[in-house]
Length: 92
Image 1 (cartoon, one colour):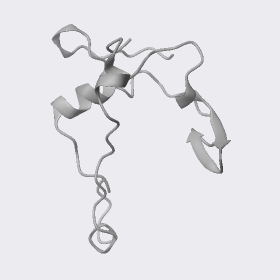
Image 2 (cartoon, helix red, strand yellow):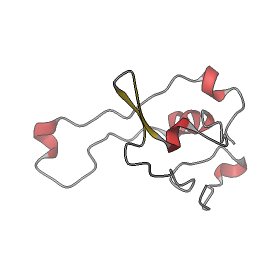
Image 3 (spheres, one colour):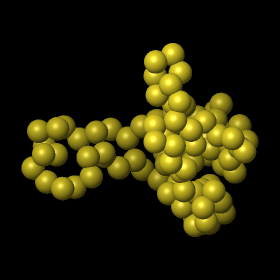
């Protein structure tokens, strides 16, 4: 679990996209990388709940919520806020 109050304390942040005319020239990532502090804050928002919204693909008021193809988010993909910067490697 991230931080019990992290979902309320930290606003959701998304990485900034590179300009399309720039990114069509190469095969690099199209998001600018976020610094470690911001990544940790976003990881702290994870509530590690039993039925999380991020594991579903639903339309709510015409807007997509969660994964549209119902993929489970692997916990190894998200850096946890554990001691010493340890990362979880097991599936959810």
